Length: 158
Image 1 (tube, helix red, strand yellow):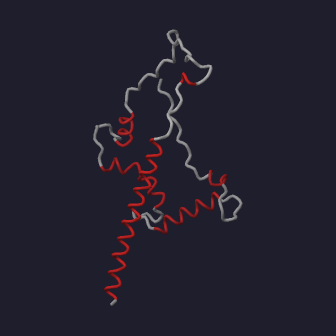
Image 2 (image 1 turned 120 degrees about the vertical axis):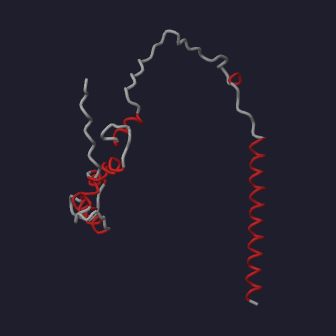
Image 3 (image 1 turned 60 degrees about the vertical axis):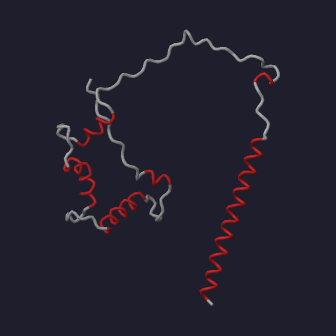
């Protein structure tokens, strides 16, 4: 008896899903028909007092000069951030070296394994340093102090 009742529920559930899908399709098509019969937007000539559009004479206008392109493309700059020796090849060590300093700061015991505890202690210390009033919560002003410091732009080599 239990098998028959379970099968009945499955069949009834499938029929109900098909009915809901059918009702949804009819409703969706009904909305499309309403939108098709909507009146068209008014044209410019139908608006009173505005028979003509203004004409702009742009023949004598000059814009700012476009900026000069740098020698390296954006992708080349990104490539050379990793290619330290400029041999046009990025080795595994060059790729990993950009993250090594940040990893070493988190790896407190120096075993080259970052445990959850090491990460949690660093994060907790960072939270405590930002919580100026010591209430265990960060206000938007306190949280703003946790933002990474902006990197200094290199001096112009002009």
